[in-house]
Image (cartoon, rainbow, N blue to C red):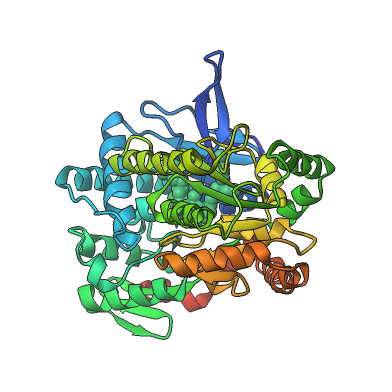
Length: 478
Ligand code: ADP
Ligand code: G6P
């Protein structure tokens, strides 16, 4: 069917997320092109939407008038306009300087601002109106992440016929922290507008039930929350990756050749330690660097034989917290290299750049130790990508207990990144692990991922959204 025809008849499945899976960027000649957007949300949803032929409503990454709806990689994309003010208030302000730090244990101080809240409301209304206009009767609408927490409630009023799901990709904090938020009741009412609300970790689900009771006197029985507006199911759905695609990349001869080349280019180190993160203060990059620097200084890792490659994907660069983090990370990297590097031999290769999936896979294959040490992380897909890439069951994963992924990847070298001594011990243990030890840990983790890939995650969520168990609201209305 022609794309215009689909738009008129309405879609049976719509995803709403702040970001489209592609950003508009200018190439070196100044012409526009589309580039895949960073982050775990896009990684997870992209393969599903390609298979399901739904529509994706989101922002194309630049302020100003949006392009017309278009199809990219088999997915119908409907760009939503954000003005300069919206980008300041809704995206960089309320979403990424209030909610993001607050939901990540306030590891940076959240900033509260009335104008940002107004902007957040307006943009949430715009997204809801876009979905209301594109959804077929009775369609499934799946709203994603902390930018759009008011959308389910608004959309419910506009289109009571829809089945509305919401998934939070980041942690939901405990009552004590969440209640700092001036928008707390409004956000809870917004989320409870959904038939089904999903979280990465049982802690998030439990915090949601407690918040519903504490702020709105709602009653929870099992997974079902009864509240003034109806009934909402809350449950845990740990997100995953497209394991088959990751394995195909891992087995691609070009990727394998590139992995060998990376090691040669790094001077054939005995131990290559890798970090891959958006440059974000939740990711524990500074703790990791400090641990590495101390291990070199103490001679527990040999500076002539050990290399740390830290990929720090540029992220949210106009926000103060992120600029300050970049300064601190870059100072620490240069301090470590200043003391421990030699001519033509760096100890830390710091790459503030974006890489495509094949180059990332080559890095995962090249790395002896993958260090994933966030202070708080909803899931962390990088950890899962590393495991899925190691198809020969070698390699060693050091994983923070504060990443959602730790609930599943229990055979990793699990650490509390705040405990510097234990973090150092874990890095050394992983670096020195014998092959049998590596395999004994890697094999069950890889088997777990094969059974729990992103397709299963999406099917579990969408089936649940369609089944009568979550149907309270429809029954109540009948
Ligand atoms: P977060 O969602 O906080 O960024 P995750 O580890 O869950 O953290 O997800 C990061 C995802 O972004 C991974 O799937 C990773 O492969 C992907 N990624 C890393 N670098 C890039 C990049 N330059 N462009 C697009 N995606 C990237
Ligand atoms: C995390 C969030 C996503 C977000 C991504 C990248 O994964 O959960 O919602 O898209 O980070 O961040 P950005 O601000 O660039 O969209």
